[in-house]
Each structure stands twice: as C-alpha cells, then as structure tokens.
Length: 586
Image (cartoon, rainbow, N blue to C red):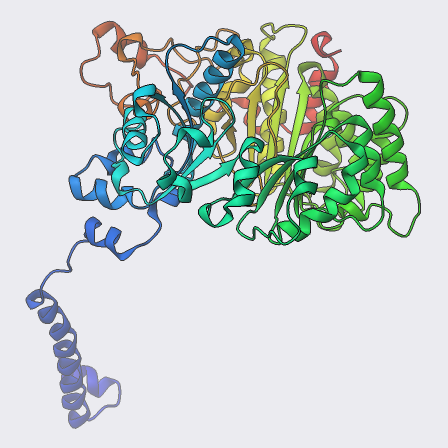
C-alpha cells in the first residue's frame, strides 16, 4: 500500500523506502524521551522546610491570622518562621490595678487597638504589641518580655525573634522600667529620657523614634548627632523657638525622614518663614485643647501667608510626599481651606494625604488629570454620599481612572443610622462598587472604617466580606474624635482584610447582603486564631465539625446569594439618579 501511494505521488521505490526509514527514525526518536522519562526518577516535591531555610520572605505575603497554620504545623516550621518576625512593643509594669481612670482608659484603648490590628497585620511585622508585666518582673528583662508576648500570641516562639523593639513611654512603661542590658533594643523614647540619651547616646544604638519638646531640642549639645533616629515628634508649645528648633532638626537628626509637629496655634505662622524645609513624611497637629477661635485665626493667617506670591511660597512643603493634617477635615472660617488647598495642589511630590473632609477633597479637585495622589483618607457623613458620588461622576463620563491605589473612607453618622429602603441600599452599593472597580486604579482598594458601632450593621460594611478584592475593613474603634490617618512612607499601602474579624449580623441590611446570624457555639476567644479556627461562614462552605444541628441549619441558609446582585451591573449615573429621587438622601 505504501508503494502504491508513493507511485501515485510520483515517488520512486527508493524514495518510499527512505521515507519509511525517516518515519521509523522519527518514531524512535519520539519514543526515546518517553522511555527516559519512565526510567528517570520522579521530580522531588517542594520541601517547605528547605524553602524556609533558603530565606525567601514568605511572611510578607501572609496576614498573621492566615499564617497560624504554618506556625503550628511542626516544631521546625515554628522556629524558622519565628526568626522572620519583627515586633514593636509598648508595655506597662503594674503593681496593681491602675488607680488613674485616664490611665485605665488609655491602657484599654491600646489593648483593643492591638487586638483589632494584629490579625490584619502582615505576619512578618513589625507587629505592634501591648503587654502588661507584673511588678515582680521589675526591672524588665528579655525573658519577662517573652512571657508577656507568649500570653498574647503563643504560636510564635519569641525566643527566636531577633528584631525586637521596646517603645518606652513616660509613666508605667518608661526607660526606668527596663534593665540596662535592654537599652540596645529600645526603639522609642519619650521626652522624660532625653537627658539620659544626651549623656549616653552610644547605649541606644537601636533607637529609631524620639519624642521631645521644642525647648529640649534647642538645648541639645551642638555636637550631638543621632543618625539612626528617623522619626521625631516635637511638642512645639513655644512659638518663639520654632525657627531655631526646626533648623536644629536637620543638624541633630541628619537622616530624619518622618516628622510630627504638635503646634500651639501661634506656631502655625513660623512655618511660613523662608529657609525651612520639611522631610518627606510630615504630620501637623494644631493643639486640639486650644480655644477654637484662636485656632481658626492662626490657621486663617497661616494659610494666606503660605499662598502669597513670595519666592519661598510653600517651600516648607516642597519635599513632602506624605502629609497628615487633621485640620484639613475641619470647617475653618474664611477662605482658610481654599488657600491651603491651593498650596497643596502645587506640591510636586505629594502622594499620600489625610485626613480630609469632602469639602477639602472638592477644593483639591482630586478628579483632575494631573492629580498624582496614590492614597487619600476621607471622612464622610452618611448624608454626603450623594455629593461625593457626583464629584466622581465626570470620571465615568470620560472613561478614565484617577491615580488612587488606596481610598480610605471613614464613615460618621452624627444623626443616627436607620435601615434604608432596598432600592436606595442597592443604589449606594452600586455607587461604591463603581468607585472601587472602575474609578480608582485597577489594583486599588477601598478601606472602610467607622465612628459609630451601629454602622457595622449596615450593608456597606458587608462589602469587605462580599467583595474582598475591592474592599477592606479597618476594624479599629475610632472613639473620642479619633480619626484614621494615611500610611507612613516607611510602610507599603496597607490592605486590611477581614481575617480574625467577626462578620456583623447585618440587622440594618434590607437587601441580599444580609448574612445569617453568627454561630455563638463556635465563638473563639483568641483574636489571632479566630480566623483559622472559625472563619466567617459563607454559602457553600463545609459545616465545621462539632457544630450543632441548629447551627448547621443556620449556616446552610447563610449570607450572600449565589447569584450576582443586580447592582453589580448598574452604572454610576443610574445609581446617582436613584439617590437623587430618594427623600432619604435629600
């Protein structure tokens, strides 16, 4: 048959034989690799222990709650992973219960903040920890610190942690509370220890953060230099020393990269002087205890001086990349905010900004094409949603995105929270989804935080569980007028997931995002292990072993519907029109 086929194609018998030989050789060549593959040893599986010993920074990609399984997998993995952890520790040495009510409230606030932050923090750290040590451990030594840390997070072998930094605050956790052998591990000092630092600067080789007053800064020896200190907080309560003190900063701290100035109201004006230059990371706070009229007057004058057409106009802010200024969220009289916004719009290096009101964001014109911000921290009242979405509407009409990679929104509800109608709730959700998915950068994220606990029961706060790719949750309780701040330049833009956070019941949810009631029987006391031991339930998950039949029934009928809600496909313009016609949004 092959010969006939060859003849029909005009080939000779010799050609046919040659082609047969070539075909057989090709088949043999194809068979040889297969035989070699069969005889070769199978490829060795990836060894997790060997991978950890190779030194890749695996914990930089895992939240602490998500890394719990790797820590407890074996003794060797626990040791190897613990070597990669870094920690910043704030501590108290306590003889008995705190007698000061203010001290007790501060201790409780720190403890709650650490409990909320830790599960969402990267496992590599630096983990921000707060521990209490009994008086019998005075003066504090490394074994006592390890015991306190083990009580908080037992899965880490703290004896293996090499990068450990103690933040010595004035009061119960001051420098006098620790053994001198630990001075090299001190990472932060308060103003009460500045005199000892000036006498023994070589004893504090690990110092990175320093808090001092303006008078202490001016009184430091001229020959003293602290190149390892990168963060400085200055209490500027004497405006007469402002210029001299700010000039001394660059001399005493040549590698200063992050500066926090707490100003008396009269201290705003010296910032407008020529020759002053702030570092890349700047935070300004006008004394909140000062009289409101005095604060408004000085901010008004200072903002106008900054905007005057001098040759040094706005030079203090020229190098600023991150600016954290709470006054941008306040309603100052006159044109103070207008003048401040005009100065901020001209800053060439500004990338991270907080914490601003909707009025300030509108004055900054964050939707303009030359806006280079990558992070914005915004405070919104519930009744300001409509105005915020209308401000962003030109982006959808022009089919473009702004440069924001992280939009942090802090919700306030001073007039209370109520359940919305289903169509209004869907319109609000559609607007926020359009903002996260189509108006900021493709890899951007929207982080929610709240000022009133009741807001946790609304549909908006279900989005971090329903769409974790686009939304995150800052679970810290911001009380007593405290507000979230922008991310320091030393840290990457932070994504707060819902690891270790209990999903709210959604009692104020009217639509499809209302989850089922949480399972009380599966409550986990440890904030670190809560996510691994009892993750928030979603439809389609396996029922945990040990759950009661009643709990199994509740979880089977749980959270979000399998079908995509209609508001996911609603354009921003249509959703805004729905809000405009609703009485609840005026």
